[in-house]
Image (tube, rainbow, N blue to C red; front, side):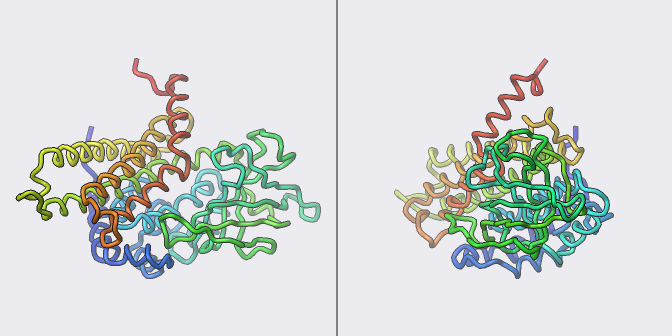
Length: 389
C-alpha cells in the first residue's frame, strides 16, 4: 500500500499550488464581490493545460484522470470555490460522453473542452426534480421529420456554468413523463445555439459567485441522431458517481484554506496577554478540525483512485458517496470554525472567512445532497456492497 503520489501527480499538485497562490489568491475576493466571470483565470488554466486533466490524451487531454483533477481542484479551492467549480465543469458534462458516448461524439466534443476552445454544462436538475431525478418532466419525443432524431421540451434549473456553455449534456425522458421508468431517461448533446434553446434567468446566489447558475429552457429543440447518447438512468447516476471525489475535493480544499487562514490569525491575535493560539481550547478545536480534514483527504483520494479504475458502478457507491458526504460536511464545519476563531472579525468582509462559510454550504447540496449520500451509503451497507467480513 503506497500513500505517496506518483512523480507526475506530485509535480501537478505543486504547479497548481503555485498558480493558486500567485494568480487565484489575489483575485478570489474580487471575483466574489463583483460576481464577474473570471476569464483571466480561465486563460491561466488554459495556458497551464489544466482544462483537459481528466480527458484522455487521444482527445486532446493530458490523461491525468480524476485523481489529477481532484488534486488540482483541492489546491485551487483553498482560495476560491468558484475556480474549483470552473475546473469541475471540465468533467461533469464530459463524463456522460466519456462513459457512454460513441467515438464520433468524443472526437467532436472532448478536444474543445481540453483546449479551452469551448465550455459546457450538465443539465439534469429541474424545478420539481432535483434529488428526485426520475421525476424529471423534460421530454424527448421522436422527430417525425428526422429518423433517429428527437425533439426536446422542458426546463432545467440551477445549471452551473449555464451562461458560459457552448453545449449541454441534457437528460430527458421519452414517452409519458409521468412514468418513472429508468430506462426512459436518456442523455443528449445540445449545442447552445440550437434553435429553441434559451437562457432566460440567472440565479442570484448566496455564494460561489463568478460562475453563473442559470435556467435553461428547451422549446421544440431538434436533436439529430449524432447527438443522442442514450444510456438510461444508469448513465446519469454513473456520471454523478464518478464525480463524487471531484466535488469532495472542493470541500477538502475549502476546509484546508479556511483552517489555514484562521490558524495564521490566532497565532498573531493577542487576548488576555497572550496569543489566541496559546489557549488550549483553541488548540483542541484546531487539532480536531485538522484530523477531520486528513480523514476527508483519504476518503477523497481513495474515491478518485476507484473512479479512475472505472469503479463507479453500484457496488462502489458507498465509498464514493462517503467521500462526497464527509469532505463537504467537513468544509462546512471548518469554515464555521474559522469564522468563530476570528470572532467578530470573521463575520466581516475584511476577511475571507465569511466567504468560505457561504461557499461551503453549496457543497452539501450540489450533485447529491448530504442526505442523499447518507441514503446511498446506508443502502450499500444494507445490501452488503459495503461489508466487513
